[in-house]
Image (tube, rainbow, N blue to C red; front, side, top):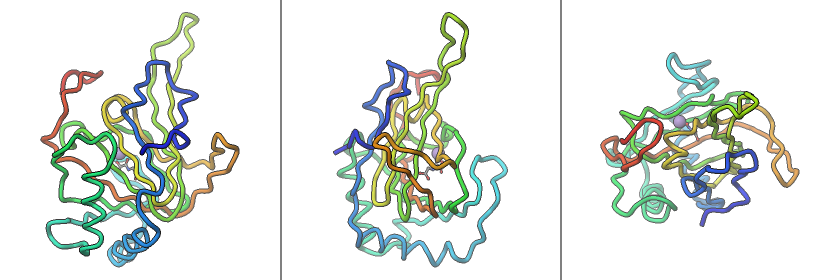
Length: 220
Ligand code: OGA
Ligand code: MN
């Protein structure tokens, strides 16, 4: 199940809904990790790292889409994706997951700036598997100024080691921006999180799947 040691809410607003985010360390085995990396590498190695993306907030990256239904993945990899569908925390049963798996490769000095995934074209959850190296994902939201007028930010950090799974739903998906931070981070236990090259496999529900969620964007 989700491990609170991988979620740092110490800088979060009191009303942050901690049940909208989950991190599961060791979700996949080392063998499964190595298999998924090996299956992504041939397509990734054909691409150069792009400096940035015209409408996105990601630097030093390359990406490919691998379809489950098109047979881009081996039977063993499909088994991992089936397990994500059936055993991830937060996901409702029968969630219509897209057959597309978005593979993102960011270089050691790449990062993803704070953003909210498109609410029209992407569904109500973000499900990610992290590979190769640890990184810190930061969820942030501006909160109304307090009485003495100082701007405040509510921030939650997720520690994403290789082989971990994370899920963002509800306020974490719709109200908070998410980012993979470029800086080296010190985790709450004092350890340094050294960023290296990182791969992520992102799965999303079909864009037509939008849970009834009433947030700053209104009912979706
Ligand atoms: C994205 C994104 C997060 C990750 O591609 O929109 O936020 O874990 N990716 O790679
Ligand atoms: Mn995103």
